[in-house]
Image 1 (cartoon, rainbow, N blue to C red):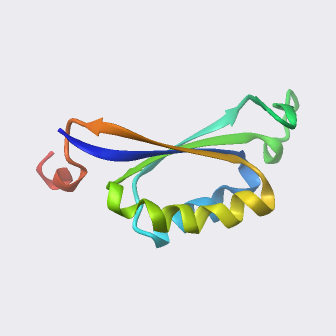
Image 2: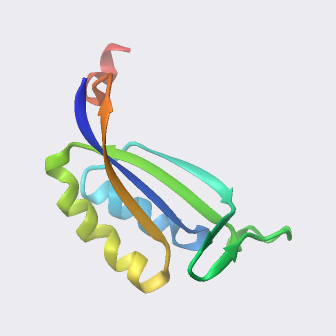
Length: 104
């Protein structure tokens, strides 16, 4: 087991490509995206009952080594500040190393 940083982002789906591109550029190439997420924050409830998916929220979860978190924050902060969204970073224990993917 070892410590990693968990990055959780909730944003509108329109900004998803920018967020994922930013994560890729700083070396966070493994992530999970959950689409059509309902949320409530300081701007109120954000969910859409219509068939228009461009207005949906997305939830992105990714992990990186603790020493790599500063470039991640520097990459995604401008997107969140400009377009909205929230990001949380926490320290968690990983029980399997992501560096050993080839052995699976």
